Length: 314
Length: 247
Image 1 (cartoon, chains in turn brown, red):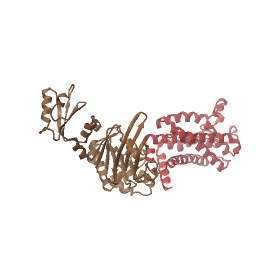
Image 2: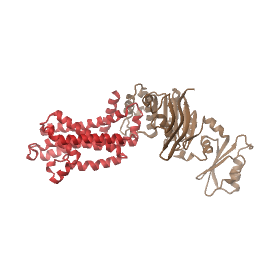
Image 3: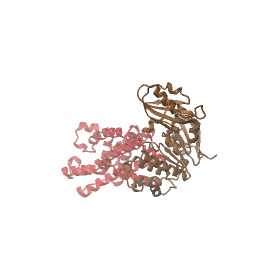
């Protein structure tokens, strides 16, 4: 086993709030490891404990065999970190930031090459304040890669970016891994975790509720479709829950999600007919009905009983 | 060392790109000098023991610059850097925490020094500035005054929740002190009652010390100032090292 990170039973509380509770996992060299969960699930606390920015109340963390708090000085040059809440001075120019941060390390990549690869070459003389959200994130990635680290941390990298910028960043992260680096990322976009990560740890309320490859997590759901539709006003889920093959019904605002049928259940066909008939019988006004394959979002839903989806529309 | 030089050089450029800070440190004192220089000239005046308005204003305006950079620039920059997470990003690099803070102090000191040198240059060129002190004495007094106010700035940066509050509190401290300490206008023209109050303002001690050494007075006349400013520095360092937060 070549675990680059091992976390054993860490816990962290802030006052009365338990941020992280008894987490244990390891990250293997060369993989893209994702930690997903809603805001407040403990992702940032976990990543910052591993980075050595926070000290866990208990538990053990080793990064490349080093303790991130006690051996911080040895570890710093080996890590590349993009923080969720970090910033550069408004008036610093792109090239100045890279040139300055490069001077802090003994060994660095050529920052001009990095700018070129990240598509920021024409922005080299632009001040930080004038960059778009996506360009800022590209610059933070450049800073995180500057010291040619073995391990790169990316915390909520694509939050607040439009889909196009987000897909660009995904490509970049793939490239980083192809260079043989290990990537540890957090996100609250399930779609991002599913597309990008080799393995995903799903966090909810400070605990890991599942950890596996996205494909395995979805397969273990043993569910073959997701039906979603919109309803208006009063609505009761009872009739649907009793339908054969329906495993889970959840309402969030006007939106209803029905999961089923369980693979291998005694229902041969799709459950759509049953759902539609039941809705029609009850005289329910519904719209925008669609069926999809289940994804990580549904894994989260069935494991925790609540939905992450509202955050996707941010 | 290369890291430190790069870092301070970038911070100097950033300081100069921030219009407010650069204006009040480098330009505003010159505006004051030319304004009052034009009104009063630099003729010897009995009120100032035979020195001219410009002669006594330059050390006083130097004290003004020290309080501007210490109370305003340093504390606002540090609080803003903390608030925005710029300090966090810097701390993730191998740059040592004390180097990060020392860099800020060095940059602010150099900008303060530049402000003073511009005043002296303008005084020499335009008003035939008279200087009867010793350069080393004035330099030491300048250093002491700067360090004491920078430590005050660090205290503000440490205890203020954000840059906005640091700015407001800084202004509340700065403006009355500017006018009542003899930094903005000579103490000699202020009434006795105000002058009695002025003794309790830290900036008054910087003004008195710089003006005294400027005209060649001995250090022994300024022991009060030395103790007050050393005490302020010590208290500031202790308080800010106990309360300073990186985030």
